[in-house]
Length: 309
Image 1 (cartoon, one colour):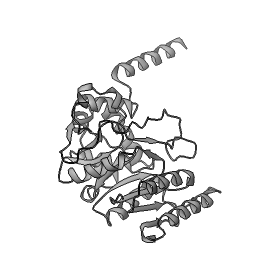
Image 2 (cartoon, rainbow, N blue to C red):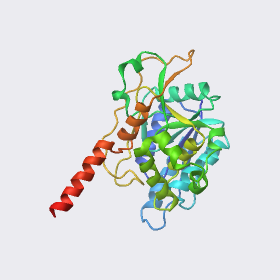
Image 3 (cartoon, helix red, strand yellow):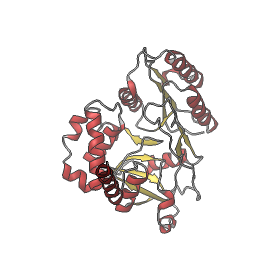
Image 4 (cartoon, rainbow, N blue to C red):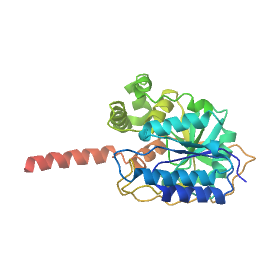
């Protein structure tokens, strides 16, 4: 039986929600909260799909209907997710968060539970994630310690966890957060390429061109100098890269769920490894930010093509 609180968020993809809830049921998760955004009036089949998601949630939490949150109208990705997290952390002091398109290894839940317990008083940690897109690129000596984890300056909403006091630092209005982070600080923490990439992302959110909530969490971590901790081996994959996704519509190579080669050592404190190399790899592998060499090559090619024409 797995007792740690879990929040599952969904919208209009009942097939994915059914898969995740079935997996949580198999893992005997007994403290699952489910939040479903409302249908869009402008999309004809939204209501049917949203009602199907509500039916799945009602069946899963039949004995605990208060753990379900069904929105009557559509708030969109940003407000639906941030308000669901507000609702969740008013009821629990820590928990795991799964969007409906996240699949996870058998070791994911146990890892999140262990790190939530072990790192709760570590003021340098803002969040925990099961995502490690750079696992196969790490030096072999990173795997020597049985309880090794990495940390980085970014944030992943793909199978993650945090605590109520960290979430209380969050501000949905990026203008209030980003105004407290100087360009110098962003360059120092993310490098020039990271600063340029995320400045554009923050601007898009601030100006309403991107409706999301997770870049605001990253901005919060940067503001308060918090890091994200991940297992040494990847434990999740995103199944949602398809046409009915909100943001992840384009095809992407799925990350292999590696799991954990060694048994979790709960009696030992985790060894958290951090380096600039980890940050660089995460930036280029997960966010697909071109390296300086790639950027220069693209600029030269673009200039050459303009010259040719």
